[in-house]
Image 1 (cartoon, rainbow, N blue to C red):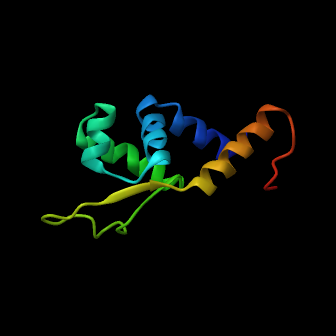
Image 2 (image 1 turned 90 degrees about the vertical axis):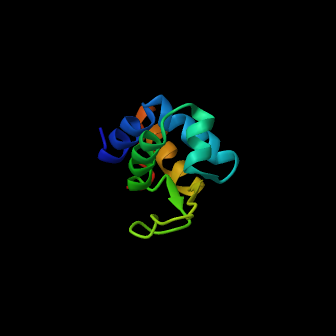
Length: 102
């Protein structure tokens, strides 16, 4: 199985991460808003966002290392192009076709 497909399956195989992607596909949201929307503790949402960010599936309006601070609100959004790339890679793998990205 291609590494990219395996990483994607591990990421979205978690229901909280799938819900995060679903909510962020509709609109940008802050971490506290995401935690409330999916019913998961703030600290756990941050860990899920880190996994999704490492895969390029989500991005924040502040770079890593500059997200902490009094009053700082970080907004998250889905990287729709990356979601499509990974979905296409999975679809190709699952249907026995060559990976469209080579």
